[in-house]
Length: 222
Image 1: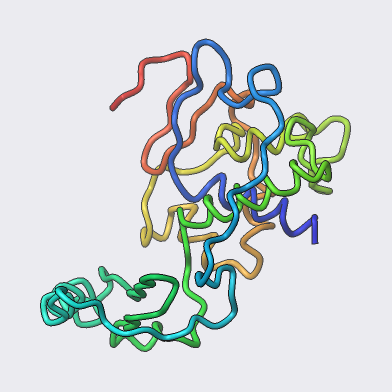
Image 2: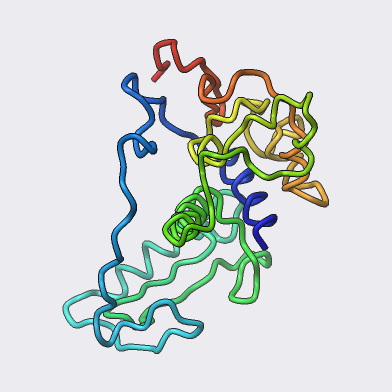
């Protein structure tokens, strides 16, 4: 399971933009942050995490017709540029759940999460760190990078989380057939596609952002 978690880190590192490193050091590094404290207790009556959300009533004072109209607009009649699903949890209960009319969307479909995956991945990594099961400052344990002569062996899990691994990634956008994102999504193994990318810059010195790349010691293009 740990192997697949690391592969997910690689995907999360590539799929979206990131911020330039601070000139005073990486925020949250071992020299500036202590161990995480316990999470707040879960409020009574709020079932999370859960496999099934209990259903609740629509809140009074909120015009559902207005929400429906906004959602219809976001769904764009199932077109290529659309919101795929809208789910509203209020007071720990499911009060609204709709999917676009596109046949690729629906409650039984696995939909791409893109940047949302970063939040889940970082949370899972944080739990492993808190439990002493993972060192984010150690080289990422990816078998394809284990050869002594492979420069990718110096890439750490922390580098992947910050999207500053230095791996090659095109700036072209989906659905351009030449874009790495398009090719990755069309591949049989998305994690392997990313893990196979070559290093084009030293880790922590190259920031990879969709549509652009720039060196960390150069001014941010905006």
